[in-house]
Image (cartoon, rainbow, N blue to C red; front, side, top):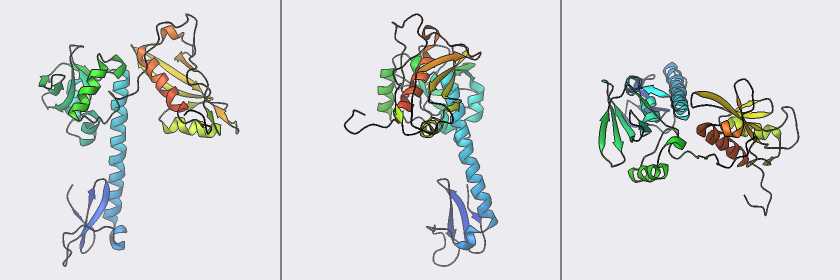
Length: 288
């Protein structure tokens, strides 16, 4: 974005997301100012630019949220859609370097470019640039990626930094020896908080929904949508509180036996429970 006139003797522009001014007259002409002069702060063009910056921030956050949803759900994404949004810097920042799978589920590459013709440019695990143009691709949840440890090591060698937490996302694999009638996991139960409000605030701050006495996380896994729930205490309780068990339910509210919980729903539910538990009050002398 170029510089815009903002009153006599000044211009403004967005620099790293902030409204910045520079002088257009005198010895300081062309020099960026550390602070906005009063005349610039109160100028209508400055107000419009601030609002535009706020919109850009919301837009970037919505792009990350959408891509995260695609990834967690492992939804098929039309290649043409990726090509269409790629020129937008916010979309590009959210999508760049994500692990992508095309027609061959065993061939994974990191997304580097998308052309107007619908061709994707990837870096494969041999470090080679490859071009693919399938009808759809997926941005797999990491628990579904083969050889995830190797992917993480290769990404570190390339210096890859993802805009959406994918390959470095914490994952949990469901144990094979679960009791047939088990419906709850208590690995992260008992995390004590000074107040129920503080525990609920942690849940919402991490991006989870609070409904009634639960922190919840809705996940689409294997074509079915389920909801993971962690008990956090009665809504109007004003005393201390602690995390309860983790369970999963279908959209009709039926508690799912743990054996029916899919790998992505399991991993995301455990990730939520672990993140809530990590904010607990730790007594001095106890292990964190």
